[in-house]
Image (cartoon, rainbow, N blue to C red; front, side, top):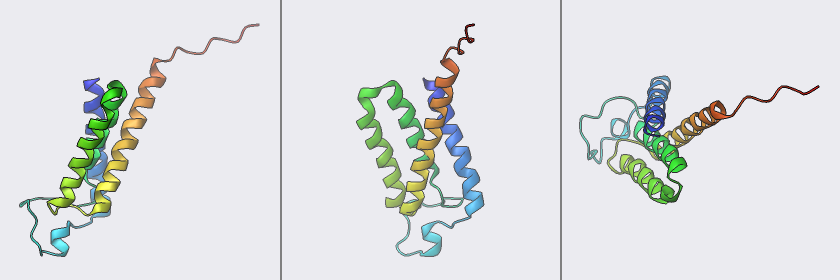
Length: 126
């Protein structure tokens, strides 16, 4: 389970970094320095949020293996995503896109793992 969480978070982070380079969207405090962000020395582009992507990727994988904990995991992922907007380093669309990316990456990884665990189909009888 922990290997899948790490793989999902790492994959979501790498994809987010690639998309940041492709979209090249400046952070909110670059476009409008007032009010100043609560976090200083934040580097890189804004879209999508890597924090949102990794937190949602981890939450989705953990929710698969800890189904009774999904509300807590969702609240934690939402809190992390919201915090990025609150501290002034992301736009709301950045965290929405990051969350969607994380959910997609985790879902794809879980589907891949599930397909690998299925027994091969029986040969046709005849």
